[in-house]
Amino acid sequence: MSGLAWTRVVPQDALSAARAQALATFDAVGFPTRKDEDWKYTSVKPILDAELAPQGDAPGEVFFSGLADTPYRLIFVDGHLVDEALPEGVRLVPLGEEPRLGALAPAEASAFVALNTASFVGGVGIVVRRNATVTEPLVVVSALSDGETAQSVPLRLMVVVEDGAELTLVEQHPAGGAGLLNLVTEVFVGENAQLRHLKVVEGDEAFHVAHIAASVARVGRYLLHSLALSGALTRTSIRVELVGEGAEADLSGLFLGRDDDRLDHTLHITHDAPRTRSNQRFKGILDGQAQGVFTGMVQMKPGATGADAQQKNPNLLLSQGAVVHTRPQLLIDHDDISASHGATVGQLDEAALFYARQRGIDADAAQRMLTRAFALDVLETLPEGSLRDLATAQVESWMETP
Image (cartoon, rainbow, N blue to C red; front, side, top):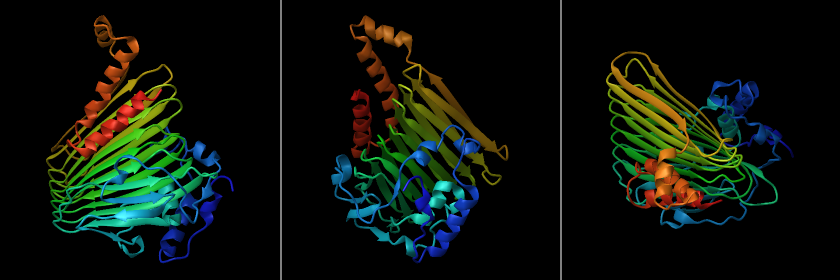
């Protein structure tokens, strides 16, 4: 079966009404085109042209490495949960029993969210109980197997960090087979709660389309670090609502592309309450014919008095054929706020390269050294320990690959 005709199949279960509505929404809006502002620089044509079969009834085989072997984990292969080990204070909830499903990511959010809602089979709700502090990371691995047929796999996650609780969540999407992972994640951060969220995507031949929607309550903190390491088409859409007084969102990321990679981060942060704070720091490094996109929107609602928002997006191009589109944006509905944004696109500093060459460092080594320094700077926002070690190892591995 070619294309995405399989999306017309709607499973008949407890979610059938929501699925039918989502499919109707998709039929009304269709796939995004370059005329859609959010998709102006990212074409979904490669996905539509691919021969994608529906999600299979059983997972295929795939090799895991890195933090997948940590004590606490959820491992999905082709959208099927194949292994789980949870820390104390964390429980899983079937999404069919979760009344908040779709509250932050309704089908109207995008065509891919609508398709996910209409067809997801795999997925869970992760709930951290009130005042629980989980000291070790919970690792969620989602991989596509390297089978004969490329699949289109919808996966749905919900993360609820109840009042006063803390969790570190690591998402790993390792390189594997071709196909599409259509991932939707809804995040609820309670009062005085904290979620530290690291997302690592190694795309290779796969398409990765993710939609993260988060809500942060009073004095809650949501810290997201997103790493996109190559990919035929990797797009991560992030929407954060700061709904409680003193809520914070700290979003940082790094996208590294070469050859014909297509990497897209699209962010929208809404300040709804007083004294909320947001910070965005995303960097891009592109080589070959790779293309990158960063869209960062910050919206200050009338009730967000005393809010503060900062945004930076420096980018480094290593070849003449690489392209990056950067669009920092502010939408402010009143004056009692503090906000700044900025974006740069450039190449390696010739003076710095010359300085390195004068000290006996050859041209290739000097370029790698300066590129590494540019990239690893953003990783300093990660806490010292396993998270930073994982991210640093992934970035250095990418740089060492020809």
